[in-house]
Image 1 (cartoon, rainbow, N blue to C red):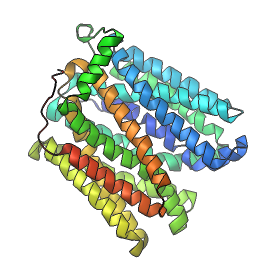
Image 2 (image 1 turned 60 degrees about the horizontal axis):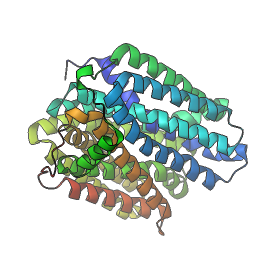
Image 3 (image 1 turned 30 degrees about the vertical axis):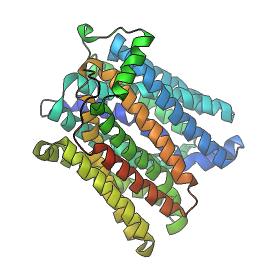
Image 4 (image 1 turned 120 degrees about the horizontal axis):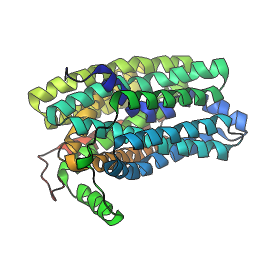
Amino acid sequence: MSAVPRPWLLTLAALSAMGTLSTNILLPSLPVIARSLAVDEARLTAAALGMFLAAFALAQLVVGPLADRLGRRPVVLGGLAVFVAGSILGALAPTLPALLAGRVLQAVGVAAASVLARAAARDRFEGPQLAALLGRIMVVMAAAPGFSPLLGGLVQAAWGWRALFGVLVVTGVALALAYARIVGETLPVERRRRQPVAALARGYLTLLSDARFMRPALATAAILGALFAFFGTTPLVLAGDFGFSALQVGLFFAATVFIVFAAGSTAPRWTARWGAPAVLRLGAAMAVAGGLAMLASPGTGLPGFAVAGCVFLFGMGLVSPTGTALALTPFASQAGQASALLGFVQMAAAALLTTVAATLPMARMDALAAVLAGGGVLALLSGWGRPTAVVSAS
C-alpha cells in the first residue's frame, strides 16, 4: 500500500467521514437549537437524525448506479454542491421545517461522497490491497465521530449553533476542490455501465441474492448500526450516570479515536496473515464481548463502562474494513451499485439499532449494552461459514 499517495488516501477518508461529521457535530448543540427554534428537544432530535439517516440511506441507491453510468467525478462534485446548499439552508433556517429541509439536502449530497469514496477505492484496488486501503481510510475517518462532538461544542460556544453549518459549508467546498485536484476520475469510460431502471433493479436483486455480497454486508451493517447506537446513547449514559459535562463527553469520544486507530492499523496485518473472513469473525466476537462486559459494568463504574466500550470499538474496527472489502471485491463491474447497496444496508441498520437503543424499556446503559452485543451476534452469524454465490454478479 506504499504506492497510495497520502493526499489521495486522506481525501477518500474525508469523503467517507462526511456522513458522521454532519451528524455528530450537531449533537452537543441540539438542546440550544431546540430552544432557538422553539421546538421540543426530543422532537428535534428524532427528526433531525431520523430524516438525515433515511435520506442518506435512500439516496445511496441512486448515486451508486448514476456514478457507474456517468463516472465518479461529476457525481461526487454534484453531491458536494448539494451538500453545501443544504448546509447554507441549515445555517439560515428560521423554522424547524426549513432546518429539516437543509438536513435532507445535506444527506442526499453526502451520500454521493460516502458511497463513491468506497467505489473509487474499489476502482483502483482489490483483495488484500483493498482491505488494507479501507483499513487506513477508516483509521483516518475515525477522527470524525470521535472529535466532531468536541469540535461542535467548541464552535457552538464561541459563535452559536448556526456557525456549525458554516463549518460544514467550508468543509464541503474544500473537499470538492481536493477531490477534483487530487483524486479525479477513477472509472474509465470503457468500464461505465448504462442501464435502464429495470436493469438497475435486477442488479440490486442479484446482489441481494449473492451470499458473497450479503454475508459481509450484513455483518458490517450490524456492527456499524451498533456503532451509531453507541454514538447516540453514550452521551446520555455519561451525563446521566456519571455526571459528565458536555466538554467531558467530547473528550471521552476524542479518546476513543485511538482505539479505532489501533484496530484499523491492525486489521490489514491480521488479514494478510489469517484472511479477511477470520478477522471479521474475530472482530464480531470482540463486539459481543464488549456488549456483554457492558452489561456487568454498573458494578464496576466508569472504568468498566470505558473498557467495555473500548473492546467493542476495537472489534468494530476489525469488522468494518474487512467486511467492506469482502462485500465489494467480487463486483468490480458494478462497484458503484454494490457500494450504494452496502451503504443503504448500513444506514438502515444504523436507524434501526439507534431507535432500539433509545426505546428499549430498560436502563440506558443496559439498553446500549444489549444493542452492542446483539449487533455483534448478528455480525458473527452473518460472517460465519464460507460464502458461496447464489447468483453470479461479477
